[in-house]
Image 1 (cartoon, rainbow, N blue to C red):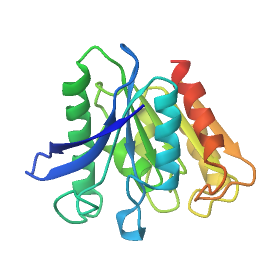
Image 2 (tube, rainbow, N blue to C red; image 1 turned 90 degrees about the vertical axis):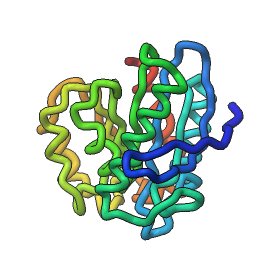
Image 3 (cartoon, rainbow, N blue to C red; image 1 turned 180 degrees about the vertical axis):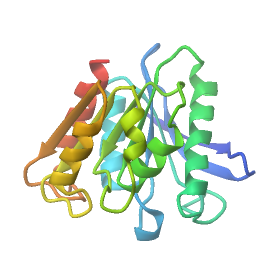
Image 4 (cartoon, one colour; image 1 turned 135 degrees about the horizontal axis):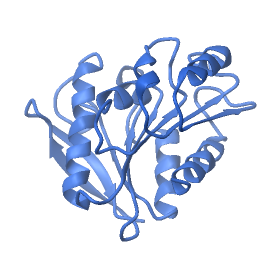
Length: 208
Protein backbone atom coordinates (compact mmCIF):
# COMPACT_ATOMS: atom_id res chain seq x y z
CA UNK A 1 0.00 0.00 0.00
CA UNK A 2 1.27 3.48 -0.86
CA UNK A 3 1.90 5.83 2.04
CA UNK A 4 1.03 9.52 1.76
CA UNK A 5 2.65 12.32 3.76
CA UNK A 6 0.32 13.83 6.35
CA UNK A 7 0.53 16.24 9.26
CA UNK A 8 -1.67 16.71 12.28
CA UNK A 9 -1.78 19.09 15.26
CA UNK A 10 -1.10 18.36 18.91
CA UNK A 11 -3.03 19.92 21.78
CA UNK A 12 -0.10 22.20 22.51
CA UNK A 13 -0.06 23.57 18.98
CA UNK A 14 2.71 21.63 17.24
CA UNK A 15 2.48 20.05 13.80
CA UNK A 16 3.52 16.41 13.65
CA UNK A 17 4.57 14.75 10.40
CA UNK A 18 3.49 11.25 9.52
CA UNK A 19 2.89 8.72 6.77
CA UNK A 20 -0.58 7.29 6.25
CA UNK A 21 -1.55 4.22 4.25
CA UNK A 22 -5.18 3.39 3.59
CA UNK A 23 -6.05 -0.28 3.90
CA UNK A 24 -8.99 -2.41 2.93
CA UNK A 25 -12.41 -0.91 3.52
CA UNK A 26 -13.60 -1.60 7.05
CA UNK A 27 -10.23 -2.99 8.15
CA UNK A 28 -8.61 -1.69 11.30
CA UNK A 29 -6.05 1.07 11.54
CA UNK A 30 -2.72 0.74 13.36
CA UNK A 31 -0.80 3.65 14.88
CA UNK A 32 2.94 2.93 15.06
CA UNK A 33 5.17 4.68 17.64
CA UNK A 34 8.92 4.72 17.06
CA UNK A 35 11.88 4.22 19.43
CA UNK A 36 13.71 6.84 21.46
CA UNK A 37 14.39 10.12 19.63
CA UNK A 38 17.60 10.81 21.52
CA UNK A 39 19.09 7.53 20.26
CA UNK A 40 18.25 8.00 16.61
CA UNK A 41 14.70 6.67 16.68
CA UNK A 42 12.29 7.83 14.02
CA UNK A 43 9.40 6.54 11.92
CA UNK A 44 11.85 5.08 9.37
CA UNK A 45 13.45 2.76 11.94
CA UNK A 46 13.99 -0.77 10.60
CA UNK A 47 11.45 -2.36 12.96
CA UNK A 48 8.77 0.29 12.45
CA UNK A 49 9.23 0.18 8.67
CA UNK A 50 9.03 -3.61 8.55
CA UNK A 51 5.93 -3.69 10.72
CA UNK A 52 4.26 -1.00 8.64
CA UNK A 53 4.94 -2.89 5.42
CA UNK A 54 3.59 -6.15 6.84
CA UNK A 55 0.47 -4.50 8.25
CA UNK A 56 -0.28 -2.71 5.00
CA UNK A 57 0.23 -5.95 3.11
CA UNK A 58 -2.36 -7.58 5.35
CA UNK A 59 -4.89 -4.88 4.54
CA UNK A 60 -4.61 -2.70 7.64
CA UNK A 61 -4.45 1.07 7.44
CA UNK A 62 -1.32 2.41 9.12
CA UNK A 63 -0.18 5.71 10.55
CA UNK A 64 3.45 6.10 11.53
CA UNK A 65 4.73 9.47 12.65
CA UNK A 66 7.75 11.27 14.04
CA UNK A 67 7.56 12.38 17.64
CA UNK A 68 8.07 16.09 18.27
CA UNK A 69 11.51 17.36 17.36
CA UNK A 70 12.21 14.43 15.02
CA UNK A 71 12.45 14.90 11.25
CA UNK A 72 9.84 17.39 10.09
CA UNK A 73 7.83 17.35 13.33
CA UNK A 74 7.84 20.63 15.22
CA UNK A 75 8.99 21.07 18.80
CA UNK A 76 11.70 19.31 20.77
CA UNK A 77 12.12 16.22 22.93
CA UNK A 78 9.84 16.43 25.97
CA UNK A 79 10.93 13.52 28.19
CA UNK A 80 8.00 11.30 27.18
CA UNK A 81 5.18 13.56 28.38
CA UNK A 82 5.02 15.63 25.20
CA UNK A 83 5.48 12.52 23.10
CA UNK A 84 2.44 10.98 24.81
CA UNK A 85 0.50 13.98 23.57
CA UNK A 86 1.79 13.27 20.06
CA UNK A 87 0.44 9.70 20.30
CA UNK A 88 -2.96 10.95 21.44
CA UNK A 89 -2.98 13.41 18.55
CA UNK A 90 -2.28 10.50 16.19
CA UNK A 91 -5.36 8.71 17.55
CA UNK A 92 -7.43 11.86 16.96
CA UNK A 93 -6.12 12.09 13.41
CA UNK A 94 -6.71 8.49 12.38
CA UNK A 95 -10.22 8.67 13.84
CA UNK A 96 -10.93 11.64 11.59
CA UNK A 97 -9.47 9.82 8.60
CA UNK A 98 -11.19 6.47 9.20
CA UNK A 99 -14.34 7.29 11.09
CA UNK A 100 -15.40 6.27 14.59
CA UNK A 101 -16.66 2.80 13.67
CA UNK A 102 -13.36 1.39 12.38
CA UNK A 103 -11.23 -0.44 14.97
CA UNK A 104 -7.92 1.16 15.93
CA UNK A 105 -4.86 -0.39 17.50
CA UNK A 106 -1.68 1.09 18.93
CA UNK A 107 1.70 -0.52 18.34
CA UNK A 108 4.85 0.77 19.99
CA UNK A 109 8.43 -0.36 19.63
CA UNK A 110 10.84 0.25 22.54
CA UNK A 111 10.35 3.86 23.78
CA UNK A 112 7.29 3.97 21.53
CA UNK A 113 5.76 1.09 23.50
CA UNK A 114 6.33 2.86 26.82
CA UNK A 115 5.04 6.24 25.70
CA UNK A 116 2.34 5.10 23.28
CA UNK A 117 0.55 2.59 25.46
CA UNK A 118 0.61 4.87 28.49
CA UNK A 119 -0.75 7.72 26.37
CA UNK A 120 -3.88 5.73 25.51
CA UNK A 121 -4.46 4.15 28.93
CA UNK A 122 -8.20 4.29 29.45
CA UNK A 123 -8.85 5.50 25.90
CA UNK A 124 -11.55 3.19 24.53
CA UNK A 125 -11.00 4.52 21.02
CA UNK A 126 -8.01 2.15 20.88
CA UNK A 127 -9.06 -1.49 20.89
CA UNK A 128 -5.77 -3.32 21.45
CA UNK A 129 -2.15 -2.68 22.44
CA UNK A 130 1.04 -4.13 20.98
CA UNK A 131 4.42 -3.74 22.69
CA UNK A 132 7.51 -4.72 20.73
CA UNK A 133 10.62 -4.88 22.94
CA UNK A 134 9.03 -2.87 25.77
CA UNK A 135 11.90 -1.30 27.76
CA UNK A 136 10.77 -2.54 31.14
CA UNK A 137 14.26 -2.05 32.60
CA UNK A 138 13.81 1.69 32.07
CA UNK A 139 10.08 2.43 32.30
CA UNK A 140 7.18 1.42 34.55
CA UNK A 141 4.56 -0.64 32.73
CA UNK A 142 2.42 -1.39 35.79
CA UNK A 143 -0.44 0.69 34.36
CA UNK A 144 -1.09 -2.21 31.99
CA UNK A 145 -2.13 -4.45 34.89
CA UNK A 146 -5.62 -2.97 35.05
CA UNK A 147 -6.05 -2.72 31.27
CA UNK A 148 -8.65 -5.15 29.95
CA UNK A 149 -8.01 -4.64 26.26
CA UNK A 150 -6.19 -7.33 24.23
CA UNK A 151 -2.43 -6.97 24.70
CA UNK A 152 0.50 -8.47 22.81
CA UNK A 153 4.08 -8.44 24.12
CA UNK A 154 6.93 -9.50 21.82
CA UNK A 155 10.65 -9.44 22.60
CA UNK A 156 13.87 -11.27 21.88
CA UNK A 157 15.61 -13.42 24.45
CA UNK A 158 18.75 -11.30 24.07
CA UNK A 159 17.14 -7.92 24.76
CA UNK A 160 19.15 -5.91 27.29
CA UNK A 161 16.33 -3.46 28.15
CA UNK A 162 13.61 -6.09 28.17
CA UNK A 163 14.98 -8.98 30.26
CA UNK A 164 13.03 -12.19 29.75
CA UNK A 165 12.44 -12.84 33.47
CA UNK A 166 11.09 -9.34 34.07
CA UNK A 167 8.96 -9.53 30.93
CA UNK A 168 7.46 -12.82 32.05
CA UNK A 169 6.66 -11.30 35.45
CA UNK A 170 4.93 -8.35 33.81
CA UNK A 171 2.98 -10.64 31.52
CA UNK A 172 1.87 -12.85 34.41
CA UNK A 173 0.49 -9.78 36.18
CA UNK A 174 -1.68 -8.73 33.23
CA UNK A 175 -5.35 -9.49 32.91
CA UNK A 176 -6.78 -11.37 29.97
CA UNK A 177 -6.79 -11.20 27.03
CA UNK A 178 -3.01 -11.24 26.68
CA UNK A 179 -0.36 -12.85 24.48
CA UNK A 180 3.42 -13.17 24.83
CA UNK A 181 6.08 -14.25 22.36
CA UNK A 182 9.80 -14.45 23.15
CA UNK A 183 11.92 -14.88 20.04
CA UNK A 184 15.15 -16.90 20.39
CA UNK A 185 18.21 -15.14 19.02
CA UNK A 186 16.63 -11.69 18.72
CA UNK A 187 17.98 -8.69 20.59
CA UNK A 188 16.55 -5.20 21.10
CA UNK A 189 17.26 -4.10 17.53
CA UNK A 190 15.84 -7.06 15.60
CA UNK A 191 18.30 -6.76 12.68
CA UNK A 192 17.42 -9.44 10.14
CA UNK A 193 14.61 -10.76 12.34
CA UNK A 194 12.00 -8.02 11.92
CA UNK A 195 9.74 -10.42 10.04
CA UNK A 196 9.40 -12.65 13.10
CA UNK A 197 7.94 -9.80 15.12
CA UNK A 198 5.69 -8.80 12.21
CA UNK A 199 4.28 -12.32 11.90
CA UNK A 200 3.20 -12.33 15.55
CA UNK A 201 1.62 -8.89 15.21
CA UNK A 202 -0.37 -9.86 12.12
CA UNK A 203 -1.59 -13.11 13.70
CA UNK A 204 -2.63 -11.24 16.84
CA UNK A 205 -4.55 -8.47 15.10
CA UNK A 206 -6.21 -10.77 12.60
CA UNK A 207 -7.50 -12.85 15.53
CA UNK A 208 -9.30 -9.94 17.19
